[in-house]
Image 1 (tube, helix red, strand yellow):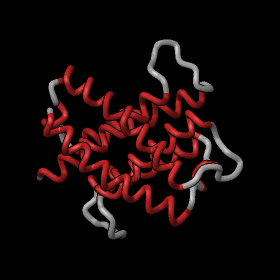
Image 2 (spheres, helix red, strand yellow; image 1 turned 90 degrees about the horizontal axis):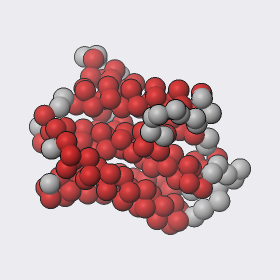
Image 3 (tube, helix red, strand yellow; image 1 turned 90 degrees about the vertical axis):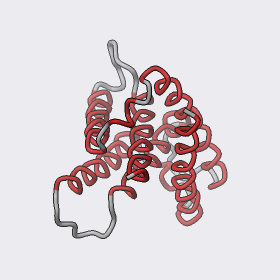
Image 4 (cartoon, helix red, strand yellow; image 1 turned 180 degrees about the horizontal axis):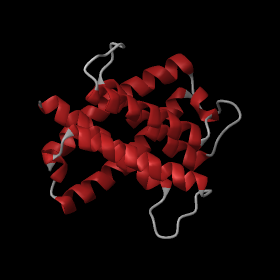
Amino acid sequence: MSNTSQQYDKVIAVCRDLFSKKAHDYGTAWRILRLPSLTDQIFIKAQRIRSLQENEVRKVDEGEASEFIGIINYCAMALIQMEKGVANQPDISADEAVKLYDEKIAETKALMENKNHDYGEAWRDMRISSLTDLIIQKLLRVKQIEDNKGKTLVSEGIDANYQDMINYSVFALILMENK
């Protein structure tokens, strides 16, 4: 499990570095995005991964890894939006955004560690394509919950789905690294 924790941290360090650099370059313009807009951005990335996995011809020179990183970062943004609400203008500094990112990722890693303990690291025997499908399934669930105005009868909320998508994306990147 400590190996998983180290591998997780290594993947997140790459994602965090990109998030931080983009916050420097673009500011926190993403603060104006509503949750369904973030969900749609994540969906686009997941669909592209699936397309890359199914098609032999690639017309854009970016692979699956960059899309999984994008999913992680957009999910972190969504978790921040859930906590802070949507802003009409960027209202936090790049440094504050990174601090909030770190908090959301720490919570998500703790969830991963608890689930990983209970599931016995079953993800290590999964295919990356299955993780992609699970992310798309989670996205479809989130879209339905959003259409239901955030109300669920018995299901976990949107935040748990975003966290699972982060963790599945980290697992995919670890598996890709181990190939």
